[in-house]
Length: 194
Length: 194
DNA sequence: GGGTGTTGTAATCGGATGATTACTAAGTGT
DNA sequence: ACACTTAGTAATCATCCGATTACAACACCC
Image 1 (cartoon, helix red, strand yellow):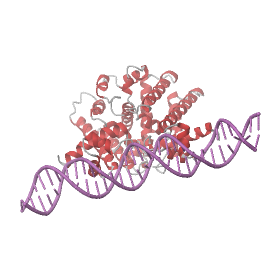
Image 2 (cartoon, rainbow over the protein chains, first blue to last red):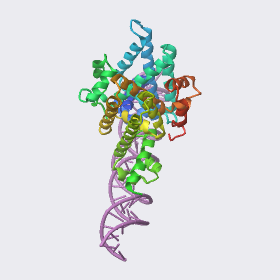
Image 3 (cartoon, protein in one colour):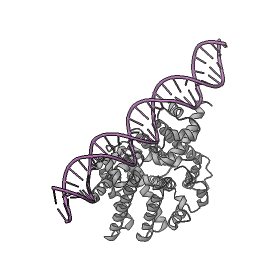
Image 4 (cartoon, rainbow over the protein chains, first blue to last red):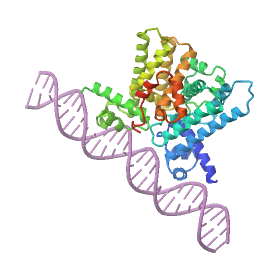
């Protein structure tokens, strides 16, 4: 296999594992095993764990923006843009680890290398909503806030309590009045690592 | 000093450090040094790092609920409840690490011990908004979402870019139309550890 | 003033982990 | 056949970290 293909494979594995266990909680060996290669090879291809995380974070951002732009592009325009982008965001749950890798990155603001990269990526997302999607500042803020709540609910594995805890069930119905079955279908659950 | 007082002191230190560096990113020695005691003593008082994190998370939740209930109790009622609780939440930024310790906890859903504790704590917060504050489900959801966005902005150290990045400046003005100076005053900045 | 419990530390251990080194195997061009 | 590059691993190293042990200082009580 070419090293380029291996890199992609490893980045996908890194996104899943970093998302599930966080930056510090993940070992390069975890990623290597998930990708099916040896630990030293991961380090050699990415030079350091820090670099590997940056690659995973960037891949998550790239995929996020790609899907958002595609959603804007093939616009049926029979339904509001915000609704369609929101659905696209939820559909991205099938790209394992994407939301949570970003969530972890957002919390690493104090890290000397990851922090600035995270701030830069976040600013790009804001810019997309304002300039490309045409949202007003207020709408962009509200949209981001909803996204962060979804990230938290996913990261906390709240789906595990859906149906057994009345409060959680109510929260899910408030968040996803229409897409609930889809969410329950594709959200990561407690059976995943950690 | 009594061991009870020491515990409180160490829990406060743990909240600050866990908030800044996350669960896995924090060492028991970090917490010990911040609290001004030796590392073995921290381990002996809390039995394990995991237990120490649970104590810090619980302390953050207790303080959060205490302040929220106090805000409800001494109600001037000249201003809407949601506004006053929102301000109380921002004021809690002066309790170093509270928001971010909770943020990290919310992302540890896959952890066999911390995960269930986090879900339980989160459900309690939801219950407070619904039963004690009298919010409708929709309002509670929206309120939680705003809180999560604030947590992310704080954890990312976005304040560091306020004034130098136009997009970030705009985001802050959208989030805090009135409280901006106060936020810039009390939010943790890049000069803190990590 | 010696026994007993409490607060606290120094020293250390064992396992984990990121990184490095040295090596193998398989192309690829000549 | 032979040099050279590329993909990949096994073995190992140095460091870090959570936990344990053993011990010191001090208070309180009788």
